[in-house]
Image (cartoon, rainbow, N blue to C red; front, side):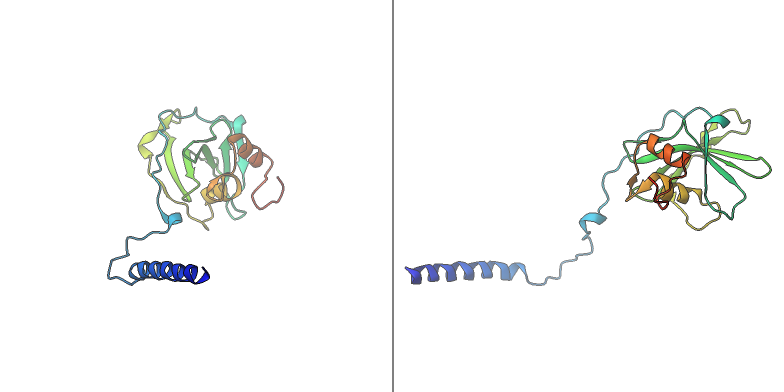
Length: 185
C-alpha cells in the first residue's frame, strides 16, 4: 500500500513538474507593458467644481507659516476649506505682501499625487472670481521661499497620500499651529 501511494505521489509530482516546466521557460515576449499593482493608475475622476465659495472676509482668515525667509503672509479662508470625495482638498488662500498687496486664489491639492491646481483667482475689480486663470493639476514645488502648497500639503492637509481628516480637523490644526512634525495633536 505504501508502495502504491509512493508511485501515485511520484507520478503526480512528475506531471506537476512537466506542466510547470513549459510555463517557467523564458520567452521572447515583450514585458515592457508590465506594471506593478501599486504603480497602476486608477480611473480617478475629479469632482466638478461648478460653484465657487464667497470671497474671503478678513475675520475668517487663518494664518499659516510657510518659511521664516519669506516676507509674505499666508492665510486660509476657514469658510472655503473642503475635502472632496475625490480626495482633493479645496480652499481659498490669501497671500499678502508687506506693502498690503494681496493675491486671492481658490485652489485644490490632490493628496494622492502631490499636485495642486488653481480654479479661480480674484478678478481685476476685486469683487468676484476670475475663472479664466484656471489650470490643471501640476506638481507641487518644494524649496521655494513661497512654496505654500508644499507647506499646506505636508503640514496640514495630506499624509500617506490621503487627506489628514475632515475640513474641521484641518482648520483646527491650522488654527492651533499643529503641524505634522510638531508632535502635538
